[in-house]
Every structure is written in structure tokens, then in C-alpha cells.
Length: 130
Image (cartoon, rainbow, N blue to C red; front, side, top):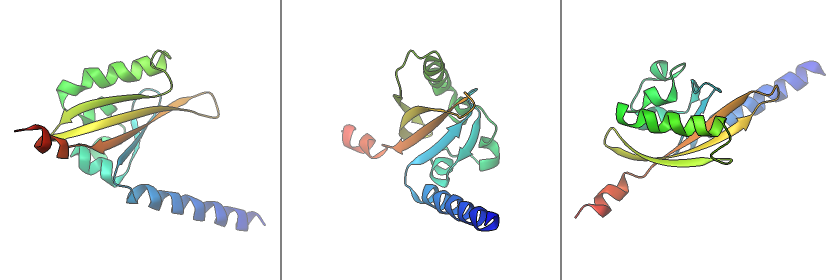
């Protein structure tokens, strides 16, 4: 029975990993300190960085310097509980317009991580530019 349970758990894990790799939006998970622990393929492409550069780096470091302070302030406000349950931020980054939607995720042991969904809104640039 234990082997069957482990096999089922591994099957579910594989299934959800495949789902995250297939979505168009970038999905990044950070730890409480803002260090990236996971980035799906869409996030890697949207951020224009290599996966090895991203994992372990502060999320703000994955963005152009002009965006880092705003992202760090947003994460700090979530840690302090000042921003409500989630927060959205628009940034212009490497020729792309990205909407970052940040949600805190409480862990079982009282820790906190963040899920950051990156949506590419670059198509709006051509609409707004005359």
C-alpha cells in the first residue's frame, strides 16, 4: 500500500508540474525573503533570464533595476500585512509590459511564500502608441 500511495503522489506531482509548464502566464514562487524557488518556462521567457540565474535570486533582481525598488516595496508591504491579501503591479521590463499579480501563500509551519503571476501586456504598447 505505501508504494501505491507514493506512486499516486508522484503521478499527481508530475501532472501539476506539466500544467504549470503549459500555461501562458509566467508563474514564480518565492520564499518569505523574496528569493525565487520556482519559475515556469513562461516566466523564464518573460523575464529574459536563464533558469539557473533565477533560482535563488531575489525576485527584484530578475527585473530591470528601475523596477526593483517598487517590487521590493510591494513584497515588504505584503509581509507587514499592509497591502491586503494580494497586490498587482505594472512594470515595463526588457521591452515588455508585465502585470505582476502577487499573492502570499501561508505555509504549514507558519512560513510565508509568494506566488507571482506575470502576464504579458506588451500588445497594449502598440494600441496606446499612435
